Length: 243
Ligand code: BTN
Image (tube, rainbow, N blue to C red):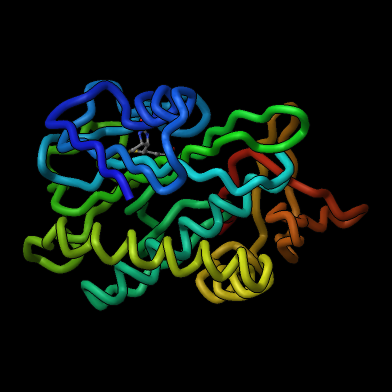
């Protein structure tokens, strides 16, 4: 496995996409101490201060169909949730598709981007941002109330190297598990961590907003939402839990 390390970079996802386009092998990771223009989902930014978090991107070439890409995202969320528990003992929840939360506040984000050719995924870049030692005080105003970090939860600094090592080991385990046994075992684990299933939610989709109850995840990783009239299948979008 190749690890490409930067002290500072715009976005590890951008760099990983460049590397993948140049033929980088599956398993290559791009990691940076700091990102100048870290990117989040839905064209948002991602606060990535120096030495305070784990900001990295993994290149995979699973040979999946493009519509199977969410499998990789769900796998990443499960790998991180497991690793966080192993290293810190903190029990986190996963909000569909891939936010990791603690007490409703965001701890981890995952941004998956892919390139498909001839109806198959050529490469997929899974970008992961883990707020390890980011202090709540230094967070930008927009995220202060909605984000947290492992050090805030534990009240002490958490080793980034130990956590990254564990995350990579879990990613490898789960990826091999998919190759050997298909997606069902990952889905089962994901459901155990889910804070979305069974909840009344608001879905802000690409074109429309609607309400319903999150009832299940299908074999492609899509969220099934019962609106009372029908079951909507959500492949992308933003979900919030209605209190
Ligand atoms: C989200 O909106 O929740 C996804 C955030 C993803 C952030 C990570 S940090 C490493 C990688 N590089 C980026 O520019 N973004 C992802």
